[in-house]
Length: 388
Image 1 (cartoon, one colour):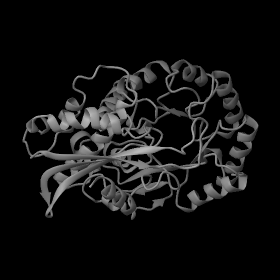
Image 2 (tube, helix red, strand yellow; image 1 turned 90 degrees about the horizontal axis):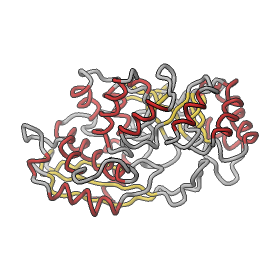
Image 3 (cartoon, one colour; image 1 turned 90 degrees about the vertical axis):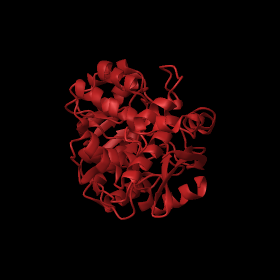
Image 4 (tube, rainbow, N blue to C red; image 1 turned 135 degrees about the vertical axis):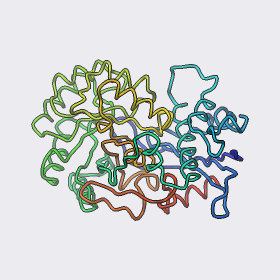
């Protein structure tokens, strides 16, 4: 067997929303299709992948470096020992051949897109959902039959007042979510506190509300917010400062006793390890948000989980960024603590299979071979139109 073609395209996920740092008016994502010569039900097996929101499409890196490396590799170099399926680890090594360490930047996103498509193809060739394949290979066969998900939203939007924010959060509660997340740092502290209080009034308690500063704050501002947020006992306080400023995160922990979260903008095992070593993160209560679609894919994510275990962290403290089906499969198959969800934004990439409603903050799993894109009709239609 072999890979016969890899197609790549760019999809727009533009929106007038903004967080504390960027707007999404020109946001794009890469979509890829890895076509194999394996036939199932009369058609070639095709694996699909895309990158999460917040990082732009990787057209150049994919076309100039990473896709050619796979297509030029000897076919046997990409297969498992039995030569009856693709081997994601060998493929990852091929993708990263002749790449210097460090400088993880944008290439981690390009590799992550291809890695996702490879895992989709591998699970389809095996004839089972990805989460079940992952559980068999890496988690002693243990699968979570449902996964905790929270509704991410609360973005700043032109003309969006407190009532519009509450209406948005009410929709999430009506859809079955028990925890909602909102943006902070895009307005003054006093204005943000009015927004937070309005949402808490709606949902009933701060433990059902998470806030996300998207790395906007310096230490003094982060501490000022921490003191204001402390009485509300929030679900978490996310990414207060620059994601690579581990000292800021460590100092902030001295001023905030409730859960904090970060990691979505760390794109390698090495950066994740530095976070654990130097950022004062507390394994009994804090959350880690590494997103495999942005950080070299699942092959690298497995290394991150191994590193966390060696440092006394449970995989249950991981709740990946991105709100997509790849992370949902990983959460169910590898025993993570949950997954982000985007009910209203970044569609059709956000969200899960069409027939899996959220109930009391948990979503069930699909039974479709692979990642399950075929069970999310609007996304699958877009992928087919773009890359096939």
